[in-house]
Length: 120
Image 1: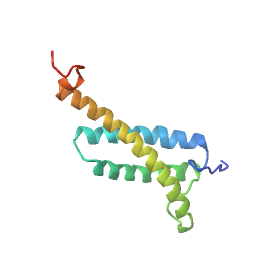
Image 2: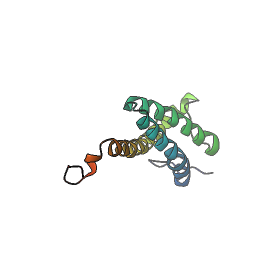
Image 3: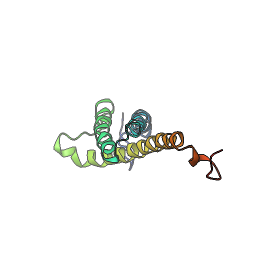
Image 4: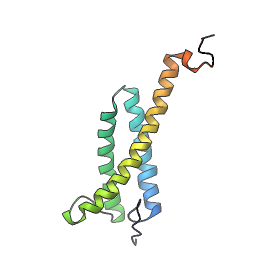
């Protein structure tokens, strides 16, 4: 596969969408939901997303001949696309966390979802 190297993707747009946004995004969304359900902090979620980013970068490397963090000559490129992957995955994890946390709050505090602020 010939490289297209753009600001957001390294090999091709389809590869970025499938690996980072679909596969990684679903996993990141699940991480966000899991940290919300466990009432864990944002720091733990960021740590999990860092681990997920390394796994996604490895998929880019192994399946599509993208860069990884070794050899050292490719570290700069790998860091750039790793940061892009991290930001995308963290955003999707935050969406998963927020939707789960909102559902938890609505279930626990029903008066928050009424329009007048009074329970019926």
